Image (tube, rainbow, N blue to C red):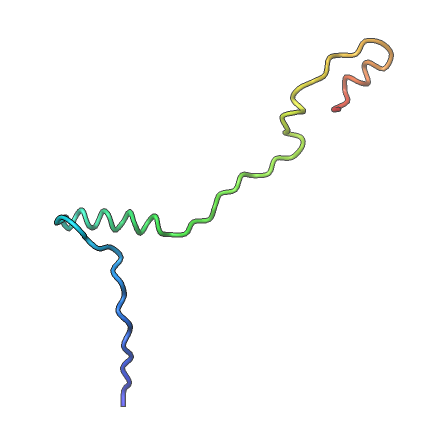
Length: 76
């Protein structure tokens, strides 16, 4: 004996409340709603290392006197 499994009724994706849209309009709306409902992975910004930090692009004024040449090359 073959068993038949009945599936519960599926709710419609869209329901027209007012007006009489054409088949093309319903198709376009269905495509848009289906595309928006798909889950997409979030694009996270790539982490930026300390070498690209904004603060490193600003330099301190040059120091005059002994050790000034050494201080000019220091990042801090």
